[in-house]
Each structure stands twice: as C-alpha cells, then as structure tokens.
Length: 148
Image (cartoon, rainbow, N blue to C red):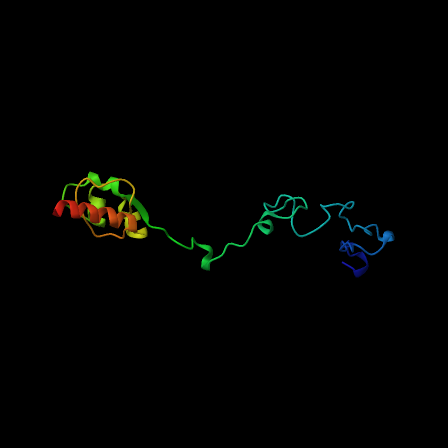
C-alpha cells in the first residue's frame, strides 16, 4: 500500500461556541433564547427554587442554641390529684410512678418529673420528687392534719 492511497481520515473538530454570529454558535452559544433556563446555577426542579421570591430559609429567623437542638428539656408534670391513685402511705419517687404506670420509664429518666399543686391529696404521702411551692403547701397541710 502506497502513502498516496491511504484512506481519508475525517476528524471531527470540537465546536467553538460564543465567538460571534458568523460561527453559527454565537450570541447565546447554543443555549436557546434568553430566559430562566439559560441561567446556570439552580435548576427549576430544585427543591429550594421559588421562582424569584425570597427563599423560605432566608425569610425565617435563625434558630439559636448550640447544634440547634431543643435548648431546654422540661420535666414531665404530674398534679397532686393523680397521686391519689397510689396506695395510702406509699413513697412517691420515679420507681413508684413507673411501677403504677403513671409515667413512661424512658421519658421519666430522660426528662425528670415535677409535682404541681393542681387538685387535692386525700391522704398523706412521702414525696421524694421536685415540687412547686403550691404543691409543697398542700402536702404540708395534709401532714399537719394527719399529725393532729
């Protein structure tokens, strides 16, 4: 085979875009006419795309606190009237409340329990939990009545 008879090789050149109207790929560079689809960056199908209005995450205030977790974990509230379900003269602590099904074990250990003064106690109980001032007064009254 002679060099003059070699097969012709047609190598396709890379299209150069955006180099004037004469190139055939000028002005918009093969991206069609102007509009939102021409723009790069965020596509219309993106979950945060809102069509030009101020995005929701920029409209809302910052959430404060380290790690953005709930800043305070409040204790489970139990009123005095619920303690009437316990047997007379029993000691009120986390174990007894869990045993009688008044609170859930996991929640009680995680958040703690506090006794509030809503309702009346029918008999004296020994309470070994944090209490509100009103609950303390009512428990003290019941103890005074039973002692006298």
